[in-house]
Image (tube, rainbow, N blue to C red; front, top):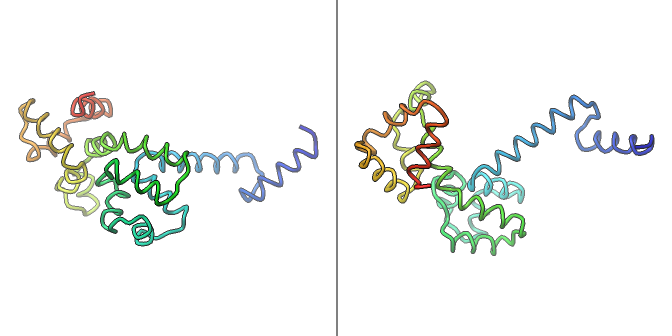
Length: 189
């Protein structure tokens, strides 16, 4: 790279990132990567990031996409998943590109796994420490009816009375590997 090219890239770095210091640039790039990974970690988070890119409030995107506001919020919060037909309609109404569509369908297929992993990571003692009710009701509702049925069936097959004893069972899963294994078993993968 010649001197002119280096100066050009320094100017671009300075304009885009506000600096051309290598250590600061590295930190900013790592932050961007982390944010990107977070946004693409679940369907709800991705829908929220798309809405924010469009600079729309939840009410606006709900109206534009023909979805009730509470349903949209439920999707963004990963408390429910749009049906295949709802997601297809949403993609068409919002005129999202093939790239966005590809990511949306990938995350749609992983939505149950994401919610079960979130449930498996539920720790009532941490919520209580923050002043939030220690009951698992919210976490239980967040997995959706189909997953609730799978969890209850798995619990019954293994001698548990879910959802009644679910909090205690989840607390017994001490490692990430144990939680992953449980999610795999419940989903039948």
